[in-house]
Length: 238
Image (cartoon, rainbow, N blue to C red; front, top):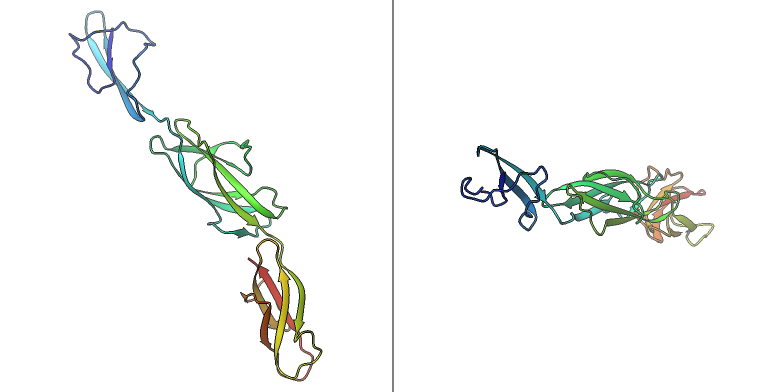
């Protein structure tokens, strides 16, 4: 025979009802609500001797909660030519904890589940195509509950430099009688806009140049001397 309880204290072994022993007994349900549930069982032999055992299980009926998913620290743009970004993830599950996550570039979610991590290197969809890229993540807790709505974040992939449509010195005049001249620049970038400009007398390396905020017009001082002058500009996007 056996006696059992979910309440934390077994009944009196001599006066309380006993139930026929079975290797697969039909027990009453555990108390309602999520959390740890402990079952205490007393086993009797034919002579009335008994042994007590207990076991616990955690009931978790609620899916995990996510706080945020960030791409490159909430950056608006990335210029990585391979579409490689860093994901920063925060999610929680108060009862059983978060076991796995599923990262997708679309809403099909045919990717395998992986262990939950707070950061991960990820490749955006179709890095050869510029524009807005989305990342979606589902979370699973140790009880198998899955988020009903995925976390999501987006970033603009922009690997192409801005276009300079025109560049003029003193409205394209052929001569100047003053070293201080006016530069006029027409530049554009369809995705992240034009954010900076670098100017030099002579040659200029756009990769290592020092940039300032972009302006369509600016005053620039030429090198001294009465001879043809060359001004070089570089522009960069956001």
